[in-house]
Image (tube, rainbow, N blue to C red; front, top):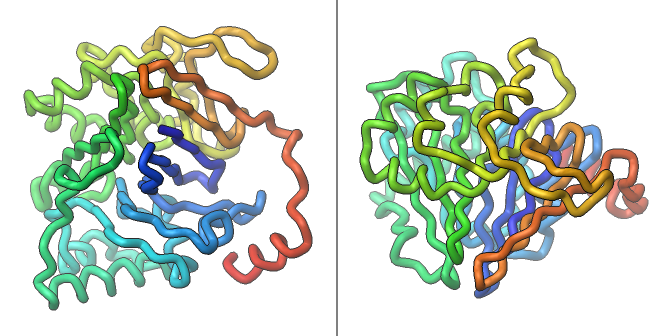
Amino acid sequence: MRIEIYDVDHGQCAMVYCPNDKKIMVDIGHNANRPWHPAVAFYNQIIDLLIITNLDKDHVSGYSGMSAIPIRSILINPSVNSTALLSLKTDGFCDSMKEIYKWLVAKEQQAAPPTYIDVQDWGGVTIHTFQNPYPLFDDTNNLSTATFIRYAGFTILFPGDLEKEGWLTLLQNRIFLSYLVETTVLVAPHHGRENGCCDEVFNFCNPQIVIISDKQKEHDTQETTSWYNSKASGIPLLVPPYGKRSVLTTRKDGHMVIQVEADGRWIINAEKIGQRPEPSPLVQALLKAYT
C-alpha cells in the first residue's frame, strides 16, 4: 500500500493506492499557489472511493474540477443529507460545495443505497469510519468522518477537523477505541490547530508519527508542533537531515509518501521545500484551467 499526502491550501488531499490497484482518495483539496490540482494529477485515472472527512471548503476545493475523472463512490457523514448541509453552510457554498450538494440531492432522489466500503475488495486494505451524528453536533468540524485505513498491521487515522467536543463523544465508542489503540500514523485534526487537540485521545493513541497538513502559519492556534512532538514516539526520516522526527508538516516538508509492505514494514519519505521541479508549460496550462 502506498499513501501520498499532498501539499494543498490549508486543507487536505491524500491518495491511498491499494495493492490491487484500487484508489481511495481522502479529501480533495487543491493548491492554487504551487500549483497542484487533483484534476491534473489524476487525469485519465479512476478513483474508486472518495472519502470527504469534513464538509468545509478546504477539504473539497478541488471537487468542482473533477467532472472528467470518474469517481465510483463518495462517502461523507451519513447523517448529513442535503437539507442538513444547507443548515450547516449558512454562509454560502463554494463551487465545489455546490457540486456536492447536487450529488446529495441526486442520491436522495434516487434513494441510492449507502456505500458499503467494508464488503469491497481493497487488496487487503480495510477502511473503518466513525462519525458523530447531526444534529447532536451542528458544526462541520465535529461532524467529521474519522477514517482509519489499515494494512498489514499499519494504521493511519485521518480525523478530519474534529475538535475536542467531537473527540470526547467518539471516545465513548469502544469500537472506535479499539482502532485508536492501533494507530501508527495520526494526521493531526484541524490541520494542527489548537482546537483539535485533545489530551484524552492519547490515553489510547500512541502514534509513531503525527503529520500536519497545513500551509504557512496564519493563526496562533497553529503553534502545536511541540505538543504533538510529546505525543508521538518518532521515527528515523530517510531524507536530509536524517534525524529522528515525530512531526512532519506539509508546510515544511511538502508532499509525503508512505510505503507499507505486505509484512508490515513501512517508511515515509518527504519532499523538501525548494527542491520541487518546475511544472512543464503544458501542466501549467492545464492547472490554469482548473484554478
